[in-house]
Length: 333
Image 1 (cartoon, rainbow, N blue to C red):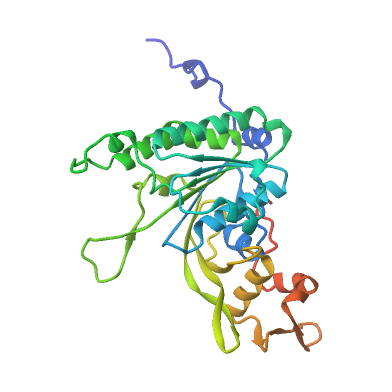
Image 2 (image 1 turned 90 degrees about the horizontal axis):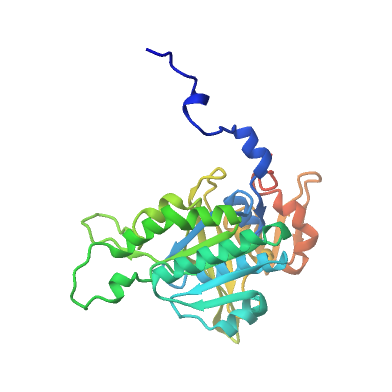
């Protein structure tokens, strides 16, 4: 009986160490969301080559926030693919409100999931071919819940089917989509809805359409819900100027989970602004006082109370950001 061969001889493959992989691929790259409080809870911003799921109730700001993230990709010189399955928004208002450059946005209205997966994979393959140019690229799928597989589209109204959407989604993510996103280093945002869970329970619970596959493959999962309104009184008539989206990190495989924050989304002009998001979150967390439209905090070095208005945010930005724990921590180090 012959002696056992070493593993290098038995398997006709070459093994590489994790150190070799890190040296070749480099550290995970992040792109800031432009909102310091959101960067804080996400671990540094948007991770390149990873998938983020944004889900929540209706009118909670999911699409607007996803497009805001794509705007940051455009600000960095990149472009993105927007797959619209819901057909529920006005794209001309998105261009004006969010500030999207329509010439660097590839827009497709698609319902069939098979076509959506082909679009995503083809976009990623094109991005991988042009990857050496250093231009960031992103994908929004809005939304997973509004898309249907061919099996469901060709069926009759009364046909009973066993989770066709979940089965196809699981297969596509496992075989092609996730690997394509990772290899092309694309920023991928999957928007999803929620449904009430009809199983017996003492608490109101929800389920996310599409099965469990996205939960496993998503590196970051963000739950968005309405947290109130921002308004003012004009001639003794209260008016709402913005909704406040409460953002909670449900899952984060890239950084420590850091709870939740608030993002006001305004109805007119620029929808999402860093000053409003940071100031509202700090005030909500009782780290800032507010009276008569002025914010105030105690300067730790002098012990004096500093008062300022919203327009003075740039002058106090560094001090305010220090109020977020570990906000300026570099997660790549």
